[in-house]
Length: 141
Image (cartoon, rainbow, N blue to C red; front, top):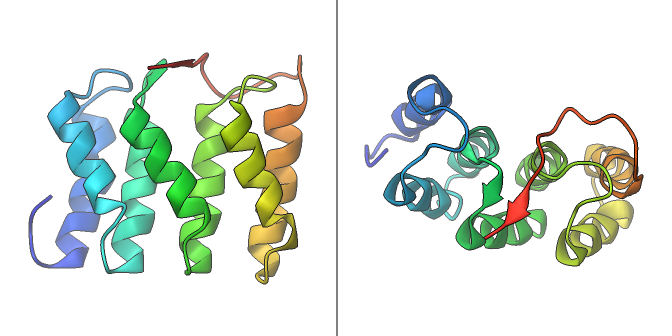
């Protein structure tokens, strides 16, 4: 994960879920992935967010939640789109915390069409109680 080449970091992030099942990531690894969500390269930020969504377990680490909330406001549309997708994956229907719901709502009028579309889908997935969910139950740390 510390390789200077963003392509190598991205490949390492892509393989994390094969090495570390969801919910069993050591805190140090989780914090390394969270750190990569602040990378100067947008592609690394997208890969780190995707990896974060795959390794989080039933308890969402505070640093991971903060990274997701920050990424929803990122200047790059691909990063915002990925952050919204991860929020949908992490929080089941009707169980998203208020901060996550507010973050999704702020993107409904985004300048990027795809971000607006993903945000609309996220509103439905995160705020409709009792709907079938592809997500696992989550409690906050």
